[in-house]
Length: 85
Image: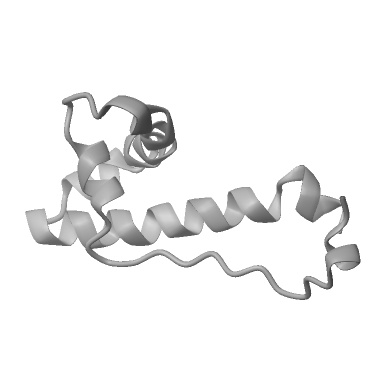
């Protein structure tokens, strides 16, 4: 289905500081049904470990909120649906 058929002109990817998903992904305990969703965030953490490891603890979370949002925006922009829009 094409986005223009739905009248979609803009797609917004919005992240936020204090994201519980990022905090959960930084831990190593299982979270049940959301573990699959957290894998995308864990990939961001792994890919940016060198940068994040140099930061103070509270700065790590803020940086990961930002990096995760940027990653998800990239994923949406490069998705099949968006490429065909």
